[in-house]
Length: 591
Image (cartoon, rainbow, N blue to C red; front, side):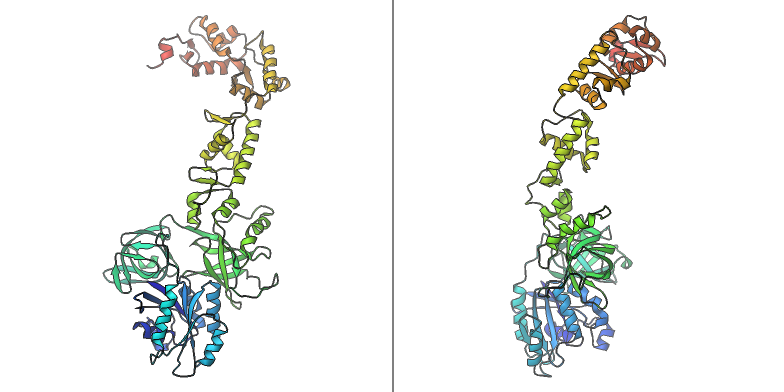
């Protein structure tokens, strides 16, 4: 099925024309039929001469119902633009045309109606000066020109792009009602993707199940875009659904209330001086079938803006929408970033403006996955997909689901090397925090990619022990030569060249035995201590050990705790210990 919208001034015969083409009354409400004007969206469908099925979204033309009109235009790729021969181009003709251009709709057909009432030549000439589409003249009342119109519609839809059936589902709801015996039904235009009976979708963050589907008045087990579709939802109260909400395939969409975008009036607009025609600070955003108030923050004359929405919407990079403010022309917007960074830090706004500037020019392409990754530095592959970006062409470093921009990867490697040089043996999680990375696996991948960095026992080491540290350990050995268990006071260690970082590096290399902060002995002192303690009457106290080793309480307590951990000694109670016998019960513990 193909789906197009009608557009044009009120009472120019749009609904009459749709009725003549389809045999279906698009004016659904009694009030619409009584007043002879479309107030809400109307829907009808037909089969073209080629056999293609075509659905119409008949949008209202009256200025008071422009929100409904925009809801109808939003999801469709082509338009049948209607101008009456006896009235010509009117105010709402211009407003509809501005909306069409701002949405970037490029395919359409200009239809001049009521040719039975007046020679259409003048209306054709006036409309063609604005609308660069093929023209057909018809009369919805007499049927004149309808065959030519059907053929022109057939040619137009044949050139429409084929929707991606594998695309994620985003069905903007434009109607919601209940049917006795069936329950809640919603309708909308399925622009791409596929819906099946039994599918689980997301509505307002909660999962709902598709109970039934209907297309062109007939039940269906499966519907592929593009199509006008009615969806029967299982167990969903009518109060939960309304126009402007969306049914989404689970896990495939970013729902955001802050969007960076470019503002453009449409192709062919004359260039504007900077500051002239800048967007309003308060406006209404129309996208799909929803209208939400937004606050607008321009980015310094670049054509880019930050939109802060009154509520979060499922949006993707490249989405087109309309920005409307009373007394101003309708403007088009194109989403450039749907998860933009905060602007709290000094200079953040200027940096963001510079990033967006190449994409803020009217007609410029939307950012791709490589660009957005460059902005963020680190991003999850699934997040890029949910933003509407394709990460498959990217050849970048990373780990697991995480991708890292190549320039950021080098910067992170340099920073990690500097951190390890200043703090050898830093835990992996501490390095992750220092680098601001979201996952431990990224740090481990960084280490692997930057030898001689290495991970051992959850800690990161660098290039080995510098000569200056080796020399400092030598000076410590000389100091402890006569009193191996009388550790130097912590304040004396830096004088030997053993700063906190140097001690950590030496301990990691096995050059010293670090018992506690500021308590450092030579390696092997623990094993030698066990031999001395074994000569004491068993059991012994910490005081006995202190005397036997010729040290003080500052050293003996952490030394005994260290020996306990190695199972070289064993505590009997709060005071007494014994030396574990090699191969004996004490060494085996509970075995």
